[in-house]
Image (cartoon, rainbow, N blue to C red; front, top):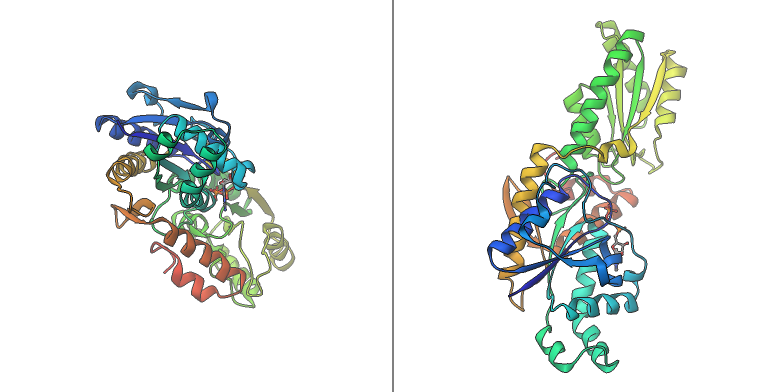
Length: 366
Ligand code: ATP
């Protein structure tokens, strides 16, 4: 029977558990054995109790839970060659040659490196006397499949990442809650949402919540944006609005690439218009709570497809990323997706915003 190991890595997101359940159930349906790696790459390096075989019912009743039930961590040791060698030993000892990683671009880059180094790592383990030549032959190839768990919706190769829809729900709920108090006092609210390099949450929540103004990293505002924003706020008050809402992505920048902070937006409004203005930073609330129905269903679909992808892979298969494109589950070359994602961040850093926009996967900003 084929052996698959699965881990969640990087920042947690809603929908990771649904993906875990989907892949475990599909793999077992296809008679594979599945091992859960706890605490991300930390568990892979440490081994022992952190790598445990699961059963069909081992993943029952997890779909409605937020976060990841197998834990996640950032792991310095896996960035070192000796850490990856220790990880390889832990997998070979259990005859695991298929690894599914649910994480962000960093986690998937690490998985790809692990796969590339795999034959050399095994050779080193033989030379150190830690594995036999037979174990080396039996485990001579490592298959990698990735899925993206991230509330930011910041990865190329998939129109949606696991957790983005749930985070959007949290933001909409928060805006609904704020709106009542804001209207009562005729206040202006500056809402800061997550998204270091990606404005998806800010832009889509602005559309869904009737925001007056929105600031995202991919599209810095024109040089006199402060004046235009204040005119817009004034206009909406003149037309009867009792509150204003400005949504700022945490990574919002101006045309010179300088950060635009919520504090700065607030100070402009107070100075220019004298409106009573408050800031709400949603922070980890966006990662909290139960996953939305969309994230649960998406998790089931991509999880099952990831199990199929890894079980159908042969030795020549490149690592793939399983995601959604146009509501269809698709496989894309993993490293191409990682390179494109990192290219967007790089283009924005260099001030090439048009290029970044054209590279952004999905249709929300284009
Ligand atoms: P998020 O988008 O939430 O930040 P991420 O997967 O990008 O998720 P990272 O902190 O970049 O998060 O990576 C998670 C872990 O993956 C790291 O702690 C490290 O163990 C491993 N990792 C990341 N990049 C590499 C790399 N280049 N080589 C080896 N391991 C890596």
